[in-house]
Image 1 (cartoon, rainbow, N blue to C red):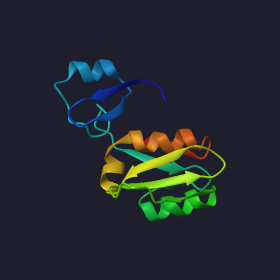
Image 2 (cartoon, rainbow, N blue to C red):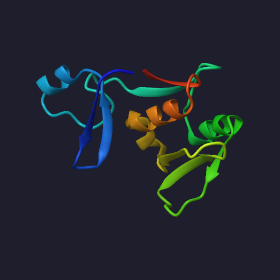
Image 3 (cartoon, helix red, strand yellow):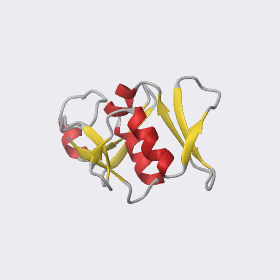
Length: 120
């Protein structure tokens, strides 16, 4: 996971740009996945399964000791682990999760060696 993290002040999203030279040389691209146009997917490494829905992600996270956290924000789908102070916050709309790899990398960082983000 190398690259440069860029903040978009228009929508408040931080995203990983894996090839910043390619992005700066192209005209201003949309905030989808990466400058190369490749879509990112979250992969559960023990089975090689691509996470395709929140229900499959929730099942995996529960098996890892995460549980649903019902905070005050109805726009977020959140998970908490009692053994840590970590909180995973995801947009309620799964299409936003799929189009922005920042959410996927948050899961990868908080679950080392369990998940991986790949280009599709």
